[in-house]
Amino acid sequence: MAVVNLKSREIECKIVYYGPGRCGKTTNLEYIHRTYKKQVRGEMISIDTEGDRTLFFDFLPMGLGKIKGCDIKVQLYTVPGQVQYRSTRQLVLNGVDGLIFVADSLKVRREKNVESLKDLNGNLKKMGMNIFRVPLVLQYNKRDLENTAMPLMKVEQMERDLNRQLRVPSFPASAVNGQGVGATLTRCLKLTLKHLHKEFQWAKE
Amino acid sequence: MNGRVVLSGSLDFVGLAELLQQLGGSTSSGVLKLVSEYAECPGYIYLKNGDPVDAEYGSVTGMEAFNSFFGWQQAEFEFINEDVARQRVIKKGRMELILDGLRMVDEGQIPKVGPGDSGQGKSGTGNPELPVIRGPVVDYVYVVDEETFSDGREIVTQDKFGNWFWVILDGIVEVVRILPEGRAPIIRLTEGAYIGSIVSFLREGNVRSASIFAVGKVHLGVLESEMIAREYSTLSELFQSTLVSIDKRMRQITDVCARFVIDPSCMENKSPSGELVTGSGRDEDRVCQITTGEAFVFIRTKIGYIHLVTLGPGDIIGRIPFLNTAHEPYSAEVYASEEFTARSVDPGEVEREYDQLSGTFKHMIQNMTNAISVTTGRVFDLAKKAKRDRGS
Image 1 (cartoon, helix red, strand yellow):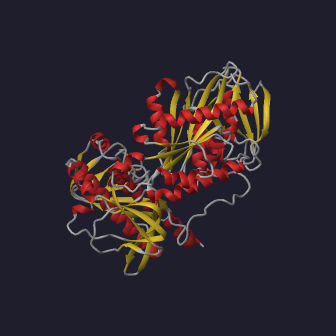
Image 2 (cartoon, rainbow over the protein chains, first blue to last red):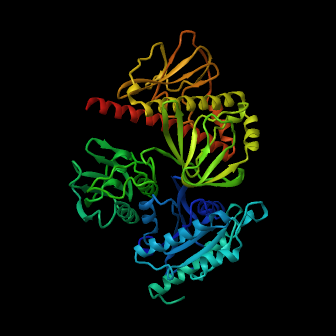
Image 3 (cartoon, rainbow over the protein chains, first blue to last red):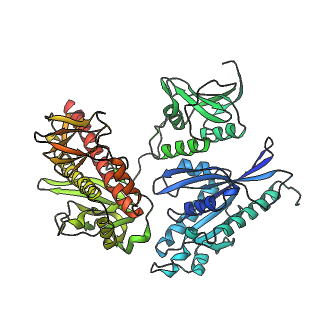
């Protein structure tokens, strides 16, 4: 749920990167933090969670306009993939406005992707949210490994595995070199704002 | 306190993390008072413009007190709006404090204060009481192949030749030292941890120092040992000796731990003799390399001194910042033999070289030092248990 801060005339919303451990959530956020410096507000907070990292920073999207004269501030988060980080995951997901599910293109991670998406579904349910309604974008990461000997899944197969029912926008990406990172985030931001307009029944500008 | 209560409620309805975010968002200044029937006294968090600046729980203050409140599950809170004159003792940002606090709760570092928690301590099968070492994110650059082992399969056999390295992609393995008297399970390794010692390729026909078994289905990545050997060969002599020395510690500690696992009665106080080189906080910045003689690493446990390791010429003593073995100068003491001489080493020099290493190489080093600190921790625990058993 977005928070309207009347003092600073800002609407704060939260976008969370979800996905199995080591899928590249952190790499996505690090790339955004590095590349869109002007839009980043404050420092990136990095918490070392076992086998993964939890990142957080504030982001001011450009070119998306204002809502009712308020600027839009986005909090970008990653969620630690490991099961044990229950409290952290709960806090991060609580009140989420938009989600980016980062799936790993490596063949060996196929099951982990599906498990993690199911886990997301379960966690959203616990908070009374519906995965079919929340603004969601999929990203098929690590496409750069296509030119190496690492066995990768085809994008079509990943679509079948993860997006057959959801039918949400999806993007192939290579977070290490930034390919697809901006496109994924922009799409999610647009979906999120559209959703907020609808949710608060604000007149479309 | 001359302010007034502007907000109150229950932490089991609004968690501390949410509450702090809320107070932060409205840049509030004042005192957050927490009262729990499970805590001896109230806790206080002082906020200035929405940021926690200090905390207090009995005689405990600052970060320590602040973090402990994340473990309070059932408590009432009151926020008193007033000007806070406290010095800023807590310097981290609000969100970092919150995320870090929750991480520590999830990792079990912060004790939960409240009615019994049923979700604790559930992990795996077999010897769940063994400590588990997890590694950082796997860097696939060095992974050349993948292998799967079924439950109970022996991945590495003690005393057999071999210098392959693996990184655990999925599942748990158990490290077992086999002695004539029996099997001694030492530690468990899981995702991101490495199998195989970083200096094993130095030894012609390396002999494995322990057996490793799969606990459930285990998925391993085979590492490109050629590349690791090549990276090792570019290191300075000092850095190479440091790694060899760490490996030596690891092997000796594993032996000591294995003996105590099999026969706790052989744990006895052996007071160290000789001159104290470093330890108990003395000479804490001293790092040196032995040139002649020997040095003995001791830890002080519940049943007295235990001799863990004997080091010789070429070995490194002291604390190198990135090598967190949890030994000297704080948790172990080092004593010198009669003809002991050593030369000083600049830890900064070693650290600079470490910074240049590849991710995988760094992770393998961290893995070794983690194993040393965890195995040492096990010796401490075994001593505590032995003391308790002897007492009863």
